[in-house]
Image (tube, rainbow, N blue to C red; front, side, top):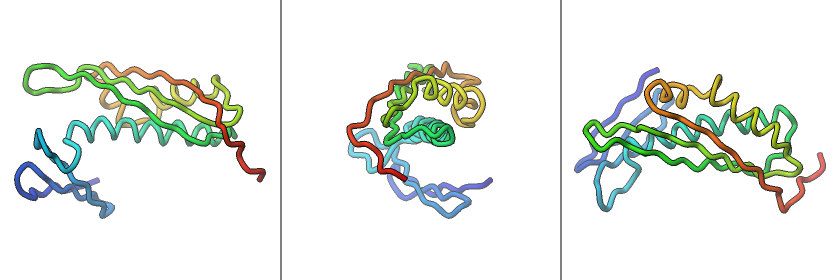
Length: 142
């Protein structure tokens, strides 16, 4: 895997992935146009784990209508300002979704599948939690 990051002026940079996708990073403290690199790392952990959770629940034939992960992180006060703690809280919405299935999906992601959070957990305390909400809309019959 390869990628490149090119300076676009001020504290803004454009990342380009091997697959040809671009993403903007902005390290400006005020008036930034995009997330900072550390915000991107945090969101990458959430995205990676969310892919796992949704996929595992779908394979278990759970009727998921929405999945959101709320990420909270703490950083150390000294430079480099690395993360010291990251918490991922999944809010899974669906029709008759089993809490037991959601718990299993979150644990599998945390312990086996999510490359980003597993990599980060080598130096950061990474924790997970979840809640299940009943969907107000019943899924259409297949």
